[in-house]
Amino acid sequence: MTKTNISMNNQTILITGCAGFIGANLATYLLDKCQNSTIIGVDNLNNYYDKELKEYRLELIKNKERVSLSKYLFIKLDISDKEGIQNLFEEYHPSIIINLAAQAGVRYSIKNPDAYISSNILGFYNILECCRHSYDGGQPGVKHLVYASSSSVYGGNTKVPFSEDDLVDHPVSLYAATKKSNELLAHSYSKLYNIPCTGLRFFTVYGPAGRPDMAYFSFTEKLRTCQKINIFNNGNCKRDFTYINDIVEGVMRVVQGAPNRFTGSDNLPVPPYAIYNIGNSNPENLMDFVHILSEELKKTKILPDKFNIEDYIELVPMQPGDVPVTYADTSNLEHDYGFKPTTDLRTGLREFAEWYKKYYNI
Image 1 (cartoon, rainbow, N blue to C red):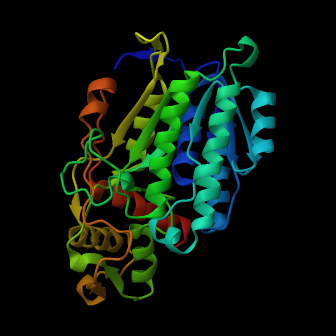
Image 2 (image 1 turned 90 degrees about the vertical axis):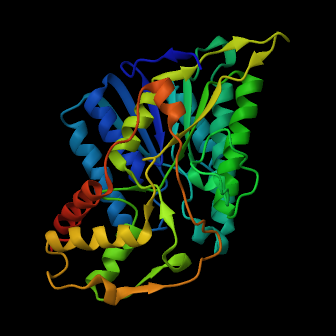
């Protein structure tokens, strides 16, 4: 697919969900690399998980801003607040939108569906509407909307690795359904209003200062206090773990190459729209993952040297909303942007363990 090159300098860049795991890392990266740009971070700072961790990430962004050649502005705002988002667009006229704000978590969606409809559907609709109206009155408007989708959209697909061309019409969780809905909404807005849109299907993102509800983080918390950890599907699960630095690099490559606008034979816009997987293309068995995690936790003295992980593993059946395997085919990302994640699981978990020890002062 042909792309329009976009410089990250002299831009107004909006990152929603900037206090989140990916959002905060992306904001610090932009402040490090961009010149004369304004980075606007938006987050509602909800209590889905520890707000102190979100505040910690925001402080890291502020520290980076102090030595940056660009400036940073944080606005506490929920993207489901239509008037608030409209006012932001009218005041700052962002040229690049990176929408990462969403209610995350597969299992949480089973008991708390309202949060997903509000943030993932209504919130994303508000972003799309503001992108649409950014061109009103002949304004240059939004150059590229990049938004977070998820590997969850592949549902129970058994063909691996998962390709962007695969059918994704059978989600097994509400979270996955909302992410698939985002892709459909973006496609229709791209077609109707000629908005360059790219969706990114992230595969099990992990690393320092990550989400406490993710397995590597929650397992660490439990093992430290000698609690057993549940390994679902009786240990027969595989995950394509993708290190945060690889995710950020992938997002940045994509942001700088927007799908080209052009007119079809019907004299109407051909949707400037694309979808890419960002994953490590190397699914790891959860049992192997747990052993590597415990080894790195022992190396950093978070767990004692004699700690026997086998004593704390409990094999349990699959939970609703879960899938047995995730596995990214990243050939399209490699072809169009020359990028493929490369961080191996042990290296990534070592970085997490070292951060965890420092953060919790162990």
